[in-house]
Image (cartoon, rainbow, N blue to C red):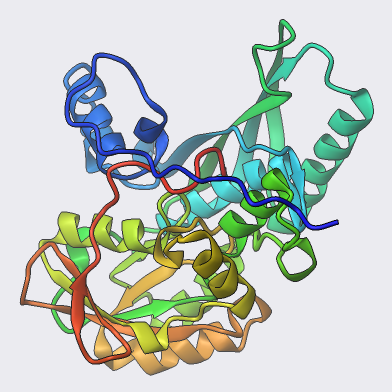
Length: 351
């Protein structure tokens, strides 16, 4: 039976609103406005104001990296993973993007009344397996149950703790013109898998989430470059475009990427074309962007491609002095276009 393709509505840009809308959770312009206008004025932590994937804080004579994330994906289970594997890998990867070695996780569960216990068992078991693969321990947690209709099955919050490396601190402020932009793997797989499964579009046989723990891949790049990595970011909410814009805005440099170099799987490209979506803004859960000085770019790319998770890594662009804080893409036709942040989100509830 052929699935009926629903009429997708692009979230309209909202300039002024006195209510939270779905676009506030997109990782795009509305998310930034929510953070700047409603959180940062009240929370005065200098670590928070760095707006990284985690915070570097002192713990006695040591420095640790702490990161927290809440996962609200719908559906709970999908090809390639489930909300539990996302919860582990997503938080572990945020620590890795800060240059930290992940060690511990906490896990808090908000369970909706009526969730089948067999579903809960599968998700918790997959979390345990993902933690084992990632080399981290889940050391404490919490459970809450809410009334039927108020929890969408299951929400999971995870907090990760890793040890900082004083000689390996990738961050946007380190990026300089001339740095090469590397992408560790194909884009769009996670977001399109979620959409296909959620809406019954029939793409499942060709698509599976790329969710994976990325610290081993980061460590390989670190070793190959003697730690000379300027910045790292995993392009989850808002996709590759949002990750690049965040780095460009924080560093004050421009970014030029090449459309022809982008690793977009055929299934993702076909699904996006059919649905009128841009793969640059589709979420990923198993790759990252690295800004590396030109002198180390070849070694970094070779290290990525030598690892199973990075076999399809590509050199996709360069940091430039021109158009500071902007991302521009050279298209396959030789023209250029600005790759901006979206006001809202193409695909809500994907992580």
